Length: 365
Image 1 (cartoon, rainbow, N blue to C red):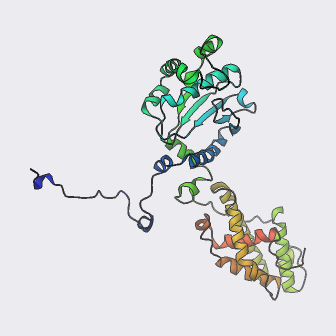
Image 2 (image 1 turned 90 degrees about the vertical axis):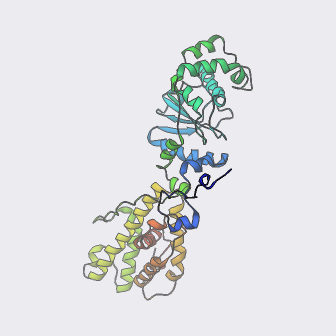
């Protein structure tokens, strides 16, 4: 008979993290490995393409095999321009709905043995397997024992490789192929865990958009050099035109501003704003996918263009009014929003002036 002593009071475990407003809105965050395990085949392909960009620092070239027959090659990392004739590594990253098993890889091993025997490529220096569900225990043990892996492939050749390597012919393990098989370096085969893939992905520009968690800290903004760089020439010319329009006298250089201390100070502030925007542009290049900073520039453009094109007493007042408007433009929908400061939004106006998308004195070329 069930008694009171058989019944245990329900006491939920104390959360490991402090509850926040985000938790109340969206629930506890799902760990990244758990997210990857839930990826569809298409999402896995996208994730692997993004992750592969993290390999660029280790290789001269990184390429995904795009031929009709993969020949056992998925993502190749090449240390030399000679590609397959030099030292290279292969990363086999296929989508399975289960942890990778020996039966999933026998044909892949067979392809590498066969096509390296044919001279399509030299055997890779390293060959890594990866899968969204990870590597099964049995396979992981085999990958750690090259002799057992070799014997397993030999025993499985007839079932998986004889007709599975190519649909053009059968590939029996005999003759010269068997000789090549016997000397093949099976120690090249190993695996990459989900944590290793995620760590590599975290160093790409795609990580924050795919997994969230915010952007990394933004570096300090450099102080504008005393002598402007050539890439500043157009927006500075526009500033000089705006000052000249305001004063009623041409301004051709910073020397012409020495008699006008307020405008000299304004000129320094505008350059600081431009360098803020350039810093944000470089930060975006290294942290988010292409096109996001351009989208931010467009948001600023459409937020200020109507006011910029209104009638103003002078080009200087047009520029000042546009700067004030830019400071008010909300960019909350852009992934760079939390990294964007008022000076950035205002400096983007000078980037737009550099491209003549904004003009402080319309008609001046």
